[in-house]
Length: 457
Image (cartoon, rainbow, N blue to C red; front, side, top):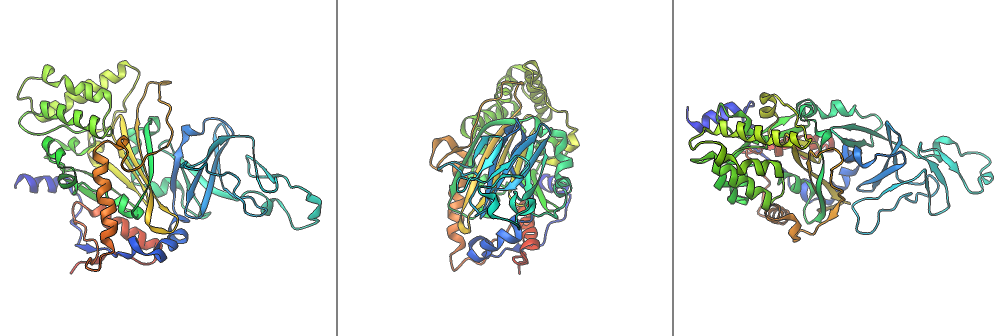
């Protein structure tokens, strides 16, 4: 068996999918985009923020998806609640998003409508109606209070669901939740976070990051440090991706991986330096510094597997000395969990032992050609030393994105334009490396009632 065949046999765990073609309407049709509001977004769990962003009773944040706006508020030390962000009187939003901001944040004991002064406590109950006696009947707790939205937490994130009959969040997230629980993602905190409104459909943006098939061609500089081709697996509603790795190096399917070539010590140093400077993602200062010592601490000719073990053990020890404790995750879980999970419909978790890179994608109203794109890097920090961060609006040409992500941006805008070309018959994802893309559309079609992938013939 050749090396490539051996890698695929070890990594795939699923047979190749039958080649499929996807409908372009899901990306370009305004009718489809409008239908997503009722058929998709009103029915699914959506990640809206982190638990640590709401530490005190009365802290709140807002989340917008198409025409709906949601308030999530801490009502007790152990309780979060969510409501539609709308006054029961005349429909004015209770909390306005500041101009140019991603969302609204604040703290208070009540919500007051700026139109006629109706008031609501943190439990969503109406506590004041001006000239209440003018309504001798008809108003009651149900129609004068705030309307509840389902809210739950997992992995340190807050999720909402507008469907009152939705399945529990934990059930919805499986099998991702069980495979990611050992990474203790709830202990990580933001290192940086950025957002922008981008000129493509939200699915085009999501799909740019849910496969590694593009890496050699969009990011050719990474090929100087090893092979970055990988697998994609359907996982029910969700999917995950990872790197191909020879037998005996299964952990190199994960986010923290060594460089290849004749000297894994040197290529790992180069890979870490490049990643830190040009992406500022998928690594930490501790990992970069530990990599710099590999040539000093290991002899030439050290096998790649031993280089990886030494590097990670050294970085783990360095972090422990400054009060950062990595989780201990069984190697088979590290391998099986891969590099990133695509949580249906619009959230990606790129997890590692001490850091993660996450993306979120949302439609821009019912405009099929625009979307909200959000990227956040998280890290384990010593308690009390977490940096103070906010969502920073960052235009696509801003140097804050460094050099790697803008390469993806150039594809996203070009793909959206290309989708509308008369000669384009529809996306044809790689049945091995882009199975995640097909799986996304398979699940979308279950909600939308249209747009199922078709066999390519």
